Length: 123
Image (cartoon, rainbow, N blue to C red; front, side):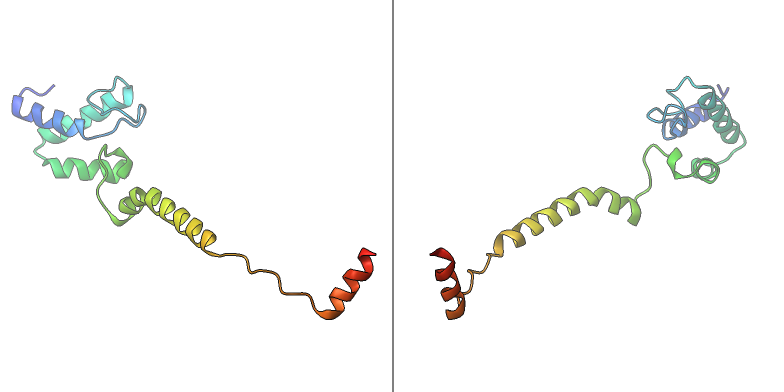
């Protein structure tokens, strides 16, 4: 813990936004994993050194990738990821609608030779 309560509060707020890479569904502040403890220590060192919240987050993302964020940044890729279920449902509904719209054509009438052959086979 940092001696300065303002810095400690900042460090806790930053840690609450970082994912524990071991637990994956907990922040480093909530996790009891050794890696989370080490990451909390790094965050507190950077805050004590005077780094801004953005600088600490940027360092963590550079080191561990975007996965370390509990709330990933909004980008075209994340929008596509969130839109995929709706796109899949819309595609399925469109395919079903197009499939139901197509009615099979009635068979063409038999030619006279085919009628004669059919009559011959039915005797």
